[in-house]
Image (tube, rainbow, N blue to C red; front, side, top):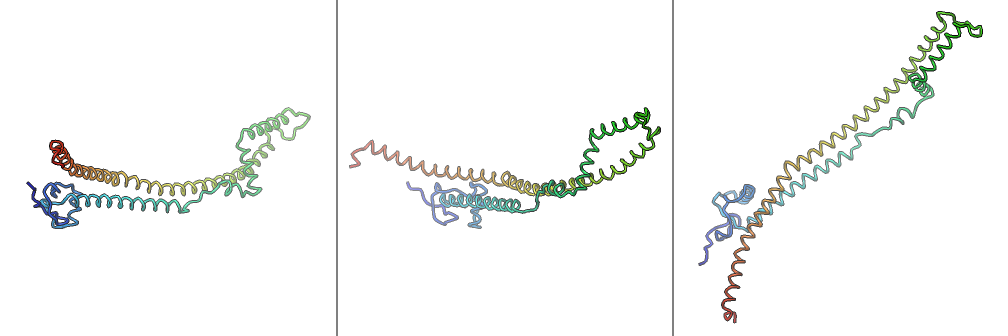
Length: 254
């Protein structure tokens, strides 16, 4: 007994048997949206054939893939543009600060370097001890600065008065170096922040959009495979039945 083709596909309008399709209420939300885009008059009880349903699934999967690829291309282009921008140029501090020093600046740096070392403390202590010993013991009959060492105090005051501005000049140069360092760090951090922000957007796109889309695509693929399997099973059964009949009645083949 032949099964009547009393179901009309809401997409193509052809008649099919109830086994050759599904009702709209049995479809997933994604496929329902696709059917409604094709036919706004579709209802929950509307029928769609397997062929059109597979076409809609493939179209939906292709649309999801194209949309994700476009977003990926846009983010990649944005990242490439950001990387290509010359928004920061790392400067060599040795060239900008130390490479153009004058003789006076080099001398100031040398004095500041020596004045802040143990060598200066040891040498200056030895000079003070020798100075005071000569004037106290009258070594070799020399007594040019008797106690309380007024000349020594004057000498120390002059050294301090001269050394202080020289060290300050060197410190000013160090402040310039720190300023260059800070400027380089700021430009580097700004550039890195923009690049990291774009990379975060790509990761969010993967986590929140593309991976769920991949799961939806896999789900639709499984549904398509299940429908194909359901279509193949009757054919296999008919072939098996035909082989069994031919085996039981071999004379009928002649």
